[in-house]
Length: 273
Length: 258
Image (cartoon, rainbow over all chains, first blue to last red; front, side, top):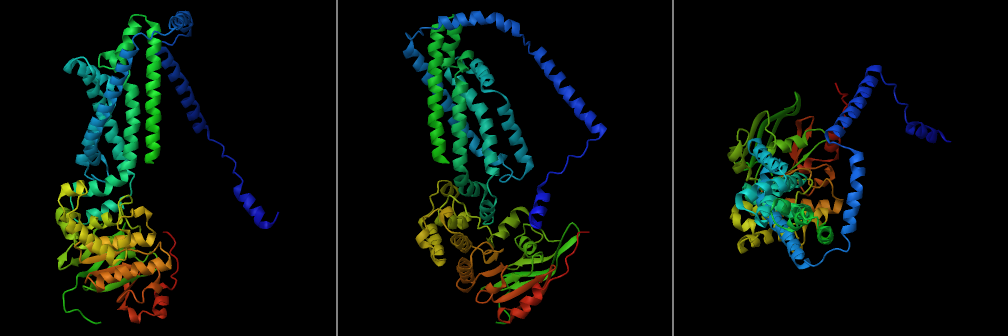
């Protein structure tokens, strides 16, 4: 080895780990014990009981047997309900996008440096995001009655929060320069942000919109359980009536629907990138 | 050229600024007349960038006067500052174009203040404004690229679009901070030619910091040399020769961090 090679070799040798002091070892050990105790506590709280699962298995195997052959007599109705589910997700997502667009500008640090405006807007969006669409739907069923409209409102409110947050994050990821250059002309916030931010942020927010649409279609499949329309209603009825042959058809319809939408949306997102 | 009959477009008196107690600018004084090009040169760390941040009032200088067309920008804040800044056109090292807008639309950014909001949102600019923008693009030799997206243009072309944007705005003073630092020599020349024409053909006052002193001849009327935060040189460009440049850039002993 030449001298240069030797020096280079010496430089890449990983230095030995320094021996840990006793207090630092104790701290690490106690953290590990705490983690194990915590997880055991969670197991107890969650009533995890493998024996009950084992005892339940034969019953479930019986259901799987009952599911064949699947009952396709009501296929027309099921497809209509599946379309209703897609419609709930589409309308809810679009509504959320319309509501989120103005608010994301107010929630992004680069466009709204004033914390007295930005932080309350963020708090509001986080509040919406924190409540699941399912919970909102439960409330709206009580307020506007049974049916898909309650589902639309539930999806829209929850997605409004998620979208506002994700949109504002993609605004913050943009370089600040073009906006600064536009603000220097003395033009107002609406003009500068719509003209200089929107074009650059559009690909990423369309991607987010499609992603949330996929997510919402999956979320909409269970909305019917609380009476907020869609194929979830059929799902619940079949389980209640122990009609597992019909349930099998419903699950297949859901699977095909979700896969088709994911594929389509994935392709659109790839085209946008 | 000596003396200006008109009051200077940009007048800086006794500008000083310190970061965390360390003085970065010391008593900088500078007058730039309409139609004049001043090049700011000096070694790294001389305070060029801080000077530009003060001139654009991104930073409020600790003391001094910064008059743009007779109005002091130093005490201004909020809406009054925004309004006064419209007199300033900025050209940045990183161009700062909206990548997915066309060259023409990027020039229209300079006209945003003059166009109603609904037209901006719908991207329906009045024909007259589009004509102004097209004329500005023509001035920098890029009319043929009017409908090309900014991110498809070369660095030099993008910087010329940024100059056209400054031209389209109503700014009387154009400040360019290292506009050619990341460009090859030929592109740098074409950018500086476009920048100089803002002064010569349109009567704007141009202040431009440069890293390479060999670009000064043929571009600037005057050279301002900064060193250690002080103006150590303020001469007509013709008198800024190799000797002056050497003296300005002669090595100083490196200060070790305290």
